Image (cartoon, rainbow, N blue to C red; front, side, top):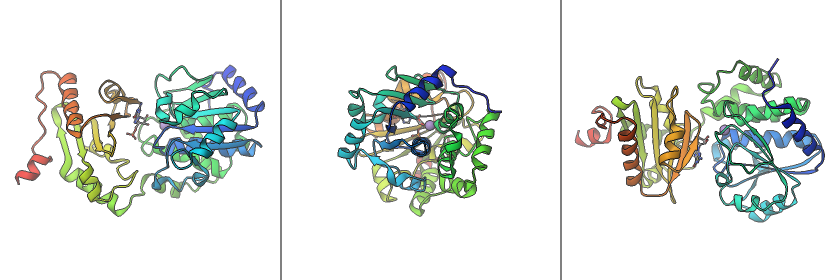
Length: 356
Ligand code: 5GP
Ligand code: MN
């Protein structure tokens, strides 16, 4: 038996809302990842099987590497077709908000969502959601929003509509948000849910490889370069920093998603328990952080990088130059580890490479 973790009165509230409408819009955060796409598309499949007119509207495009997720081609992408996105949102009688906790995470789509006079249902696992949802299913202890969608369907007694396609979507989010079942998956019920998905005859091995092991040659070369030449280690503070500039990204024909798991790599090194990756995008510095145990990178991202996330996986958008973002990293070292000199090691950093 999988335990019910969502309050029954919330489930009853949701049941009434779903039963009383026909047209449902579902959205997720910008730069959608496996969990955002998996959860929205799975819910959409199930609602359609229930006879609803459900549509997923994303703030921007899915990365190429996630085009294998069933249903991606049906997405209404705001940055590609804002007219259709407006139409779907204006026609909707109910809005699901999945895998984000505040309207600024959906970028300019937030301006369309804000004035809508429909009930908003949050299903999410980020800390501290904004108070702008009518029904809140917020469980930061959950591995992923996909896990929560499964639990919502289970408690609504709708699992009979969860077919192979929808189960595949949920599996993708549960795999990607746990780094391939590496973190945030200590709850034994997590594996019962995975088992229930596998029983629905998903192509598990193929999906796992598509989700976790699917990089272009350019992307692999970029990651090799980043680790070989750009990774700076700070053993005294258990930290790693990788910076990739616009010029370097261009050199390796960077495409969205190419650096997706790079930030995890330094955590393989004994003694390194938090990792920061700064990427110089066209309009901002994208910050990605990962950590182990109870070292909270979401606090760091909130406090220093205009972001947030989870204890062990967080990110942010930094408005400034790459040099300024780098200086902020050194400030974090100084603030969090007072009295230790923030010097990088001499075996694996830029300075060593250039002096050889
Ligand atoms: P990633 O490093 O894969 O981009 O993001 C890891 C996690 O950090 C995401 O699941 C999300 O929870 C959070 N995150 C990433 N970027 C941002 C951001 O710009 N703002 C906030 N609030 N959270 C972010
Ligand atoms: Mn997620």
